Amino acid sequence: MTFVLMFLDCTHGFGVGFDGLQESRLLRPALKIVGVGNAEVGRETEAQRAGGLPKVTLVLVAQLGETPDLFPPPPQHTDTHGIGAQFPLRQPHSSVSSGDPASWWPYCLKRCSYCNFNKYIPRGLDEAAVRSCLAREAQTLIQLSRVQRISSVFFGGGTPSLASPLTIAAVLETISQCARLAADAEVTLEANPTSAGASRLAGFQAAGVNRLSVGIQSADNAELQLLGRDHTADEALRTLEEAKKLFPGRTSIDLIFGLPGQSVASWARGLEHLLQLCDDHVSLYQLTLERGTSLFKQVQQGTLPTPEHDVVAEMYEVSRQMLQDAGFRQYEVSNFARNGALSTHNLSYWQGGPDNGVSRPVSLPGAHGRFVPRGSGTSLREARIQTLEPDNWMREVLAWGHGTRKRVAQNPLDVLEEILALGLRTDVGITHQHWLQFAPSLSLWDAFGASEEVKELEDQGFLLLDHRGLRCSWTGLAVLDSLLPTLLNQLQQTWADRVSPT
Ligand SMILES: C[S@@+](CC[C@H](N)C(=O)[O-])C[C@H]1O[C@@H](n2cnc3c(N)ncnc32)[C@H](O)[C@@H]1O
Ligand code: SF4
Image (tube, rainbow, N blue to C red; front, top):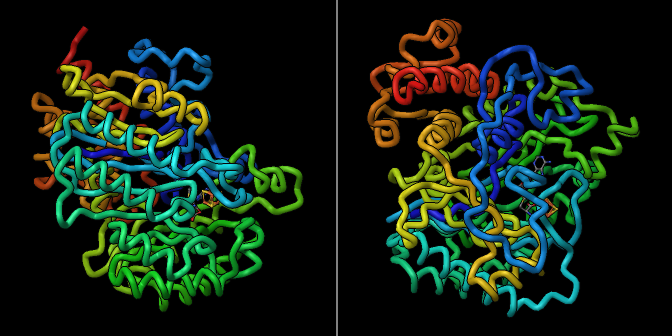
């Protein structure tokens, strides 16, 4: 089973509109794409809007009817945030007899100027209380999903490196009491340079963390200031050095490109520098100007320039090439690894989990999950969202054992659409074998083999459908968002014609 905790990463990589697509398709599965045309979709970024970037040509029209809440929301407050509302899609975003739980720490020391994640500045935080709720919810969700074996755990945020190692140890201890935590399980923690000194990192390691994802973001002090980060480039690089000593081969760095005023040359210079210092894993995020953030406001008011589409696209291309030259494999739209340092947790997420009953129990406020509550006698997958506000979430965990605010049942087509949209983010794509686990009566050939539009994408060099399965080419991976509407539309049509004709 896999706990997925987070968020879908709306900024995973370059391409327009994927966040919008994810929001509408993955979190509001009851919306049906009924056509493809020249329409804007979803949460188009401000940069796209202002810069005239290509629009995803996707039309979402029919609301098919969301299933009612299966879980009555706790009585003390009303549910004002249904699935899809105000949730960071970044990341992420779990499964069944084997799984990958994720746990969030929703607190940050300060708000970065670009980030609209569900996060809070801790004031009078009772960490022991949060710890016990995290452990309790993990226990409830694992029991409910009947997960037996866990192959990865992800502590994301917010800033989980602000939590004490004791908290991380307590959650891991609970997980290992509820299911078999494999001896070689990947246990990742996201760390901010400011809260990740050598002794804290050693504490996390002693607690059971064996992989670190460090939020470096940039090696340029002016850029870090623009991003509202609370660390300098030197501090970030010192954390990287310390992390590499403790987690050699298992330290990842997060970087952001496409900042207002950033040139391709300055971005490339910074990346070149970081490639000499980094370990074996790099996550590259294209900046999304998120409504409600101070960076968004500054760009909107004209105090900062809008990042230009062509410039940002070139940054992405240059980065991919530089990473390839440095020995990295682009194994996903925005993730690069060398020496086999691919993230198990991320892969299980993009590949939709190890079996049909993909469950991603998510623990922590505001987290998103995919979950099969086998413990309550069902094998149907649900999209779940945990309550956003930590105080309410804690009250609910104390009262109910969990803070699941919203559950939406996913039908087989919803699941397939996720498999398609997420699987194509990887360089391997979707193998025939994998697809058939989810669609025994509709092969990839059935779904896409006879489509003129898909054939056109193949002829244009974006897509490959062959004996291995369906995947993007190197060129296609960079523009996946613009390929997905055609593919999703095609899937829906063949599903309607061949699997559930009305
Ligand atoms: C939510 S953060 C958690 C990690 C940690 N708190 C940090 O900031 O390094 C995960 C990643 O998402 C990135 N991120 C957040 N908002 C973003 C945005 N608007 N555009 C692109 N990346 C973003 C962060 O920079 C970070 O690397
Ligand atoms: S530290 Fe990370 S999660 Fe917190 S505001 Fe900054 S980017 Fe967002």
